[in-house]
Image 1 (spheres, rainbow, N blue to C red):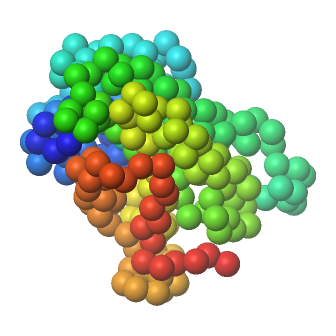
Image 2: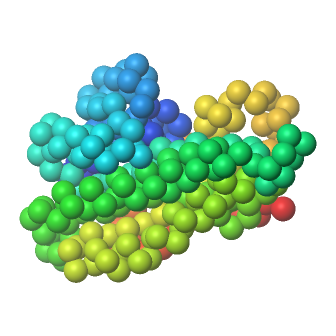
Length: 251
């Protein structure tokens, strides 16, 4: 697979890692359809890169199926799906105000884990109809976990659980889809300069960056995008989780 021949759907494509991936893919000649709840920002990014946008709730089956159908209508087919949609809460299991609210935990699982699976399964269904390449390849799914899946900190119980689930589904999904010629990979980012971190202030950003061994800085979303692009083009990568974190191990 080559990025220039890729037709990708990217969730969370209106900002952060998803936006950076969309911009990189488009710069390499890929067709891109953004899926996001933020229609204003999503349409702006799509216009910037010459792509498409469809407002999507990743937790809703009908919404995602509509988005997949729209993407195929616009691009002809789907050969890559990159799942970047996600949320993060900072709530302890038991805090000053009592136990972790169950609805907050459920919402994080629904968006980060169930949403990832929902998009992956429907994208895979669409990909299986693609004409195979010489090695049988029909497409690739790239999911986003986090180093919190391995090194979850205080207040990350819901987030870490959801991302641990994303890690856990990588290999069995790759095995499920192997005969179809669809690869499944997962990226586990460290601390990246996303809109969420950008609002924390320079002092907090500097403190977070100081914990990263090398290079001692926050990750650039463009680096995630380039890694996703490499995964698309390196056809022997399958069923694996790649950390991109500057050797950071949270404690």
